[in-house]
Image 1 (cartoon, rainbow, N blue to C red):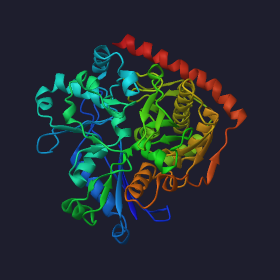
Image 2 (cartoon, rainbow, N blue to C red):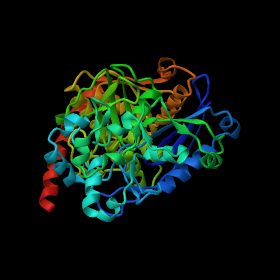
Image 3 (cartoon, rainbow, N blue to C red):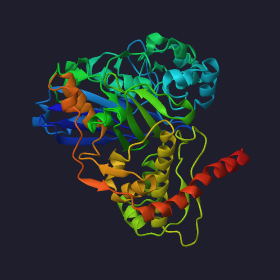
Image 4 (cartoon, one colour):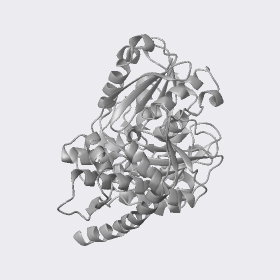
Length: 482
C-alpha cells in the first residue's frame, strides 16, 4: 500500500493506493483561508498539519498498517518562512495572494530575462516576488528567515525533518532555472533572497527522507517509512493520470484551473503568460495555462446565495442563457496576467434566477478554459482529447459545457476527484522501488466521455465573444473608479 497526501487550498486529501494500482481508500479534511486585507490570502501551517493528521487517520487503520511509502503533493507558490529552529515566522502567503504586484515589475527591471530563465514572467502569486515584498513591508520577519519551503515541502519537513523539494514545485517560485533544473543566483538576487534559504531539489520519484517516530504516532503509521519528494499539485495530477509522455495533456479543475501539456524539452513562452516548467519526472517539462479561478466561482456563488451547489447546478442546466459573468474573483494569470481585475455580471434583469446566475458562472469557467486553449495553441498543438481531474469534475453539466466551449473531447478519469493525491501515491510507489515509472504511471480508465456538440459550440462562440469583451470593459470601469 502507498499513501498519497495532497495539501490543497480548500482541503487536505489522502488516499491509499493498492498494489494493483487502484485507490483503496480516500479521505479529506477541510481548510480555511484568511484574507486579512485586500489582495491577501493566507493559511496557517499548524492547520495544515492538523488536517493532514486527521485525513490520514480517517483512512482504514488496517490499510494504514500496510503503507510502504508516502508521497506528497500540494498547492504551489506559497511562501513558508522558517526560522533557525524550523518554526514558521508568519502565516503562509498563498498562490492567490496578490500583494506583490509592484515587486514583479521590479524583478523584471532587475533581471529582464527572468521569464526566459524561470519559464514565466514574475507574477504576484509566485514565491520570489513575495520575498521581495516581505523585505520591504515586513523587514523584521525577512531578517529572521533561515529557510523557505513550498507548502507540500513543509508537510515533508514535518514528516522527515529535511528541507527538500522537487523540480515541478521549484519551478513555480520564479527562482528556478528551467533549463539547468537548478536554483538561479540571478533570480535570487533580484528578489532579496539568499539562495542558501532554498531546499535541496530531488526528482519526485526520489526518497526525500524517512518518517520520524513522532509524526508516525500523529498519523497512525509505522516510523521509518520512506517519503518521496513528490510534486506540485498539477504535476502530481499528471502523474495520477499518466500524462508524463510528450504530447499528453489534461485539465485540472479545482479551486484554480490548469490546462497542461507534457513536452520533451523546455519551451518558454513568457509573452503568452504560459508557464513552461520542469516536470517532477526526469527529462520532461510541461507547458501550462494557469487560471486563478477554476471551479472556485461556482462555490463562491453557492455560498453567496446560501444554497447547495448541486441544487444550483441542476437549476442551471435547465435555465436559458442569461447574463454574462467574468470569473476573476482574485485576478487572473492566463491570459491577462492581471492581479487587479475583479468579477462582474453583465445583463442582469428582473427575471434573472438563481439557476440563471449559476449557468452564467458555469459558462464563464468554460470560457476561461477556451481562452487557455487559444493561448496555449500559440506555443504548439493542444490535444483534442483531454482527461479532466479535480473536484469540479463531479458536475456532468460543467464538463459538457467546457467540452462544447473548448471544442475538445473531455474524459472524466476514474478517481478524478482524488487527483493529485493519487499522483503522490504513485510517486511513493516508484520511490519505494516497487515498480518503474512506465508501469506505475499508466493512464486510468475513463468511464465517461463528454463530446463537443457542434450546435451548442456555435451558440457558445457567440457568447464567448461577449465574454471576451467584458474584460476590457470592466478594466476601464475599475480604472475610472480609482
